[in-house]
Length: 305
Image (cartoon, rainbow, N blue to C red):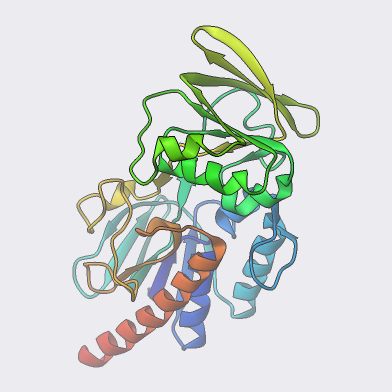
């Protein structure tokens, strides 16, 4: 039994736990993988204020050590179900059932992958799922963006100001809502390759080329990076029917990170939002941890606990 359970040990979850613990609450973090979450898969980070250059693994370790300083336990377990009915919430995991007055959902989301040869090998070595995070590492170089929607073309426009040439590979009908194809095609260093199916990423230590098929013909482009922009998937399967979510599975919450269920909060990449960065996750976590603390104090007072 805890005051607050935080589901997810990434930047949002760890920040929420620290804010709640410093306010005097009994807090635990449930994380199915390792502390820091997907930070551990990121190469270099240059856009997190206060750290001019730090690897994702190093930042993850710093977050973990910060939580340990406040004796916040990390429970290595996987959540499979929840019961948010009543004053005491239940978080049902593979190994045990944990209870708390408040729950902070910070499971994050994971990028959809291409699932092609070379993708896994070159993650952090030219394969990226965040142009905003990693684009500056490829200043003046040739890069590819794979995707057919707004996020892909947003990445392409961002990278066009940094990189020499940006190739956009779209394998299906374009799904643009916020961008005009005519305007994008006017950008000199953006080259759109329609009906292009990415097949293989190659290189030595880092990405050097991308093999793709276009109109049943295999072609190759020399590039230094592949930015995958085919969408993200939130880790919310077990929340279906338990909490209000978007059609894409992101948790809906207000500016205080409150969901439609009393005592349940959401922060970071798992919640509905426009930008998903370390800085925004940390900000969300600070709000969620603070609001969860307030909720627990009020709940205990009402129930004379």
